[in-house]
Length: 388
View 1 (cartoon, rainbow, N blue to C red):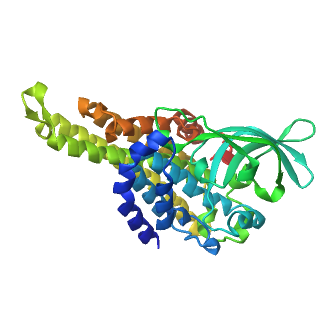
View 2: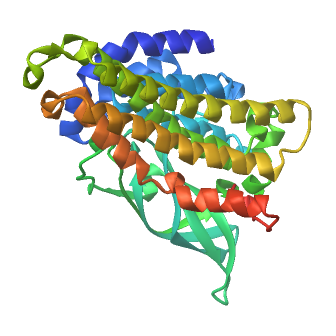
View 3: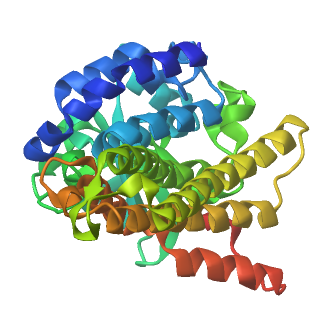
């Protein structure tokens, strides 16, 4: 089934590329693109089988995201973050899973995980309030997953949770006016003193140890992988996809380009141009290979029933943030060598440059923090596994 989804996604790529300008103009992914991706089965790749999902290999999910992003960065980004949420919903208590998919298995969720909201303990659950930014694809979702700190009566933080909130309980603020990833519609979410039952929450301390109550109903090894490995990879994969599209565009442009400033020299005959694309292609390949190889290593341990060591989880984060860096370095190099025509509005390369740099500022792509944690662990310092 995964191959059928991948084939369907690839058939859509020319259309998604043609709609890239429309997505930027609308500042949200066109409804038609979401509908067509839904029809391929893409959004069901990581969804439990008992809710008409495929429980696919996450590598297949990432391949599909990379392909989508190679056609349109904004569509790839939204597809990635919306598409990964079924994986987390599968970890929630069954009551929450039933609320999301019990009547409609095509229900989608957006998210904003930074704990900018506040939750207070109350009978049977929590009172949640706050404002969250950067909820990509929220206009195409019926629920939202929000990060929040839980406070006790003394005002002390006692937990960090993900809260599942239905559409009628939050407001979307249209604030997404940006220069990159313009089509993602990453608007603000506002919740005003809404009751969230206990069953609609998931503790980050649980996900940090690769546990979720939903594993009882969804025993697949897919749902035993580390949260931060799966989710941070969904942030780097679209950027690698954008770089893949930029590379293909650059090579095609240079094969046709004649450099007037160099007496009509064909760009494809320039030996320095050849070296540049060799380096760029290697950086893109390295970013992808390391990202996928690390996930494969984690899968192999889960399949053997072994615990995933912190060292491997930190390596995932190390190569994930450096994968983003490699992809952007490749795009920068290609863009610099593409000539003035690449600056024109509507060209793939200038949009790829803007989209990739916009994706770079996501918290998951903070290189210093992830690299420092990896190095500190190598030196024998204690690291909190909850965030890795």
